[in-house]
Length: 97
Image (tube, rainbow, N blue to C red; front, side, top):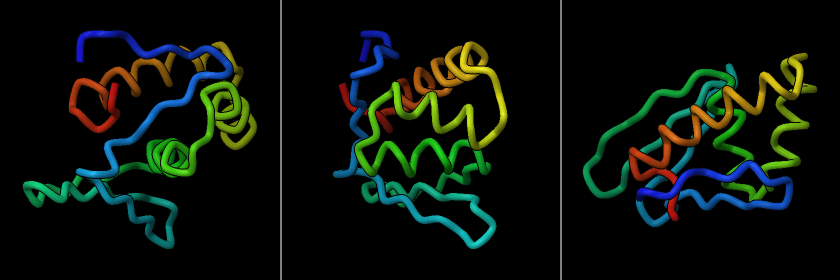
């Protein structure tokens, strides 16, 4: 898990679906359930928005645009914040290489 996340517009990131299940609450918050150890990660609305789309196969270019529109945020800020979030998810083993 040493390689960095790429935010190229045509890049796809793969959630470790063999280890994680995503569930969304009515308040648009989400939960990641680790099937192997039973841990539950609580996600805020933004994290839930991102993880839901990654599970659906959204590429990073589309993801940046949809976050920017949904949260009325400039794409440059979205890219910076998204990269930090995805790097953390990768280091936790939630995103596969």
